Structure formats: structure tokens, C-alpha cells
View 1 (tube, rainbow, N blue to C red):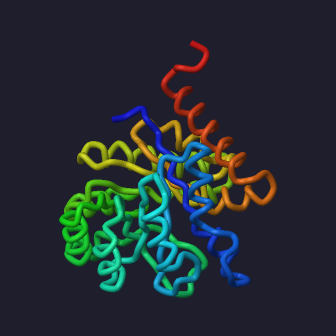
View 2: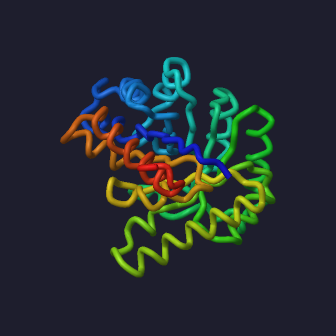
Length: 252
């Protein structure tokens, strides 16, 4: 268990805005640099099969130009494995990917493809990348992740974030809490992300076993109104305050 909570900032949708018109603006690498100044602990990007936002050139520049560790989200395909092994980013998160989806829909089905995923995990581990698997808060998926040799999971928080306030959301929160404890018991590092906002981040940040939150779309959207630096600093503050309250450190 750790009391340190890291913030990984996903800059994919800066590239989405750029690609809507073409050209070079806005630059996701510049966004990564702003995130670093505003208190991010890492940068996240998803190189998709269809290249709908982050491009191969973006990935090359991010690895070369940013000071923070990069966590590359990717599907478990031969093309993406070759790219990851060529660049050797500090982190790789294997995620499900469907060509027609708007965003990642749910977690990776590790339990249904342990051998397939395990081959990718092994190759990435050998290359020196720290591998996590993006999964639903499900004990079967957590056990399967352990079987692949991956050292970490990222728990999908989208269902929790989308649930109506009240009993249903509390039930989803408990699933994340229980999954965190279960994964810790297996020796896995626990991260979480997807759909987190100013309104939903606090209860997830308060789960002491979670060591990292990865947040993107909400922050880029909020940046339209307040600026990226301001949005990031507010998120960082909400995370830190929630963790401090969970530890009984605020107001002591």
C-alpha cells in the first residue's frame, strides 16, 4: 500500500482537435509540457490502429521531448507491439480497441486470452517497459492479469463515473475498492482511470491502494473554459485533498 497518488495526463484529445482541421495546432507535445509544469507525474497517449488522434510522429516527439515518463496505451496487436518495442516507452498499458468505438468501452478481457496477452506482456517486460492492463474491477480479470506476468492493472472507472449519484454509484465505487484490495493482495500495482471529473475524482483518489489516476478527456474539455494549467492544478488539488482526508492528514 502507498499513500502517494500520481496523476497521469492523457493528451490524446489535443490531437483530436488538431486533426479536426489538419495542420500542427494545437500541439499535443506542448500540452504535455504544460501538464508537466502544472503538476502531472506522467503523460499518457493512445496510439490507435486508425490513428484518429495521436500519430506516430506525436509518439516519437513525446518520447524525445518531454521530461515526464510516457505511458503508451495500445491494443494487443502485432503492429503496436512492433512500435512499442522500437520506442521502448517507460510504460505500456494494454487496452481493448474497437474500430467503431468513440472511446474505450470497458476493460480488456484478459481472462479470455491469457496466453495471447501474456505473450505481449512478456515481450514488453523484456524490453524494459512497465506493463499495466486496463480492466474492469472484476476478480477474474485481476487473477488473469496476474497470470500474464503484468505487474500492474488500471481499473476502469467509467461505470462508476456514469452511474447516477446515490446507491448505484456507491455500489460501483465499492467494486473499485474491493478490486483494489484484491489486486494488492496478489502483489499488483493498482491504477485507475476513465471518465473521472472534478465531481467524481475524490472518492477514487481516497482509495489508498490506488497509486495513480489517469485522466484526459475531461481535463482537455475543461481547458477550453479555464486553460489547461488551471484545470490540471484544480484536479491535482482535489486528488491530493481527498487522499489527505482519507489519511486523516488535513486539519491535523
